[in-house]
Length: 115
Image 1 (cartoon, helix red, strand yellow):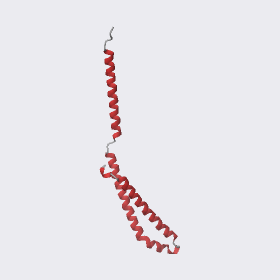
Image 2: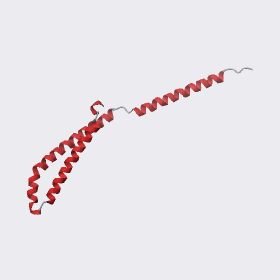
Image 3: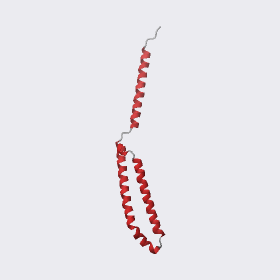
Image 4: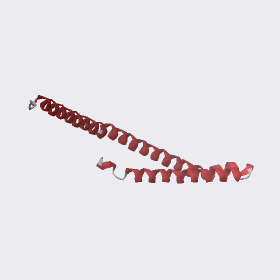
């Protein structure tokens, strides 16, 4: 699990990065929508390269996040779940304790009573 130390912070940073890009995309779309109808084609041409770059960045970041998620899911599957182990140990402890109590009780009943 050592490679995943700090992964939550890095994942939060990736999400923040994507959120900023989406805000940037939304502002570009708003700018195009607010332009005059006869100038919209020119506005689209003006931001076409920028939008293509943003698209490639978002695709790359999405792939990166999916790759990290897949690695983390694999690590979770491979990690031993300690909860069942502790419950099994506790059950064995209780069983042992009950066995000893039963043995002591049998030994107590076998002791001859004085007359």
